Length: 113
Image (tube, rainbow, N blue to C red; front, top):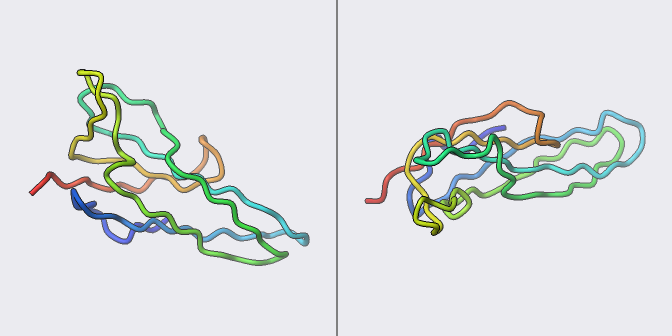
């Protein structure tokens, strides 16, 4: 996976892309999932939270690039006051076919200006 940049501006976005290849000899549909983990949240967060899903059709031997846009709103969690909140800091992000697979990239959410 390749983030377009390592820092997510408070009111901006980061493009995340991954190449998916069908090594088989028949057409397939692959599901690519975007997971995040807040590494420094004020409340303990789940290991991975599903934030988006894309399905891609691949012919035999095909490779396609699957792209997601990551925004601050996708990093929200329910805070101590019981309201949605988001905090600047480091996040792990995965583009993978399952919740247990893949290696994370790190994206840093910048503080508001």
